[in-house]
Image (cartoon, rainbow, N blue to C red; front, side, top):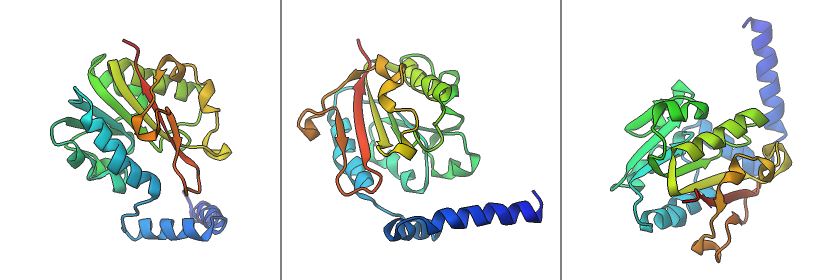
Length: 209
């Protein structure tokens, strides 16, 4: 990449940054400074949702897809389980668990045998890189393949047009799962976290037995 191309790239990044609301700009700047940002959706995941997962019987093998600065400590929430992480970006490996793999979601079945996971958690991946129809279909199919019958899939995504590029409810491989009512949210299988600019939403599924 020559100097002109680098300038164009940074100009585009600056334009995108300038278009963000002030609160989002603050989050970005804190992240760049290495400050851990605890947003309402992350606090809900780290608190109530992780606690609920721990309370379920047989949660011994967990796969967390996609890592970043704020996920580095997630394995500590599950001291009695083997907490696997996977991300295709080598620079993010330092944010993974002791059982981290550098690989894409499409390669999950090359790394793990079928029906070996009790829980698969994918938060902030769909709509943030997993955007194309064929990639999404394959990605959710791979989650289905490694999850044991009766296992749990927790999916976190942003319910706004630019982050829901395919209409999540039309992804056929995702529809293979059964919607699971979560007792944390009055038995609803889908919950939109209040006070999140991107309408962050958690879906709960199980693999049919």
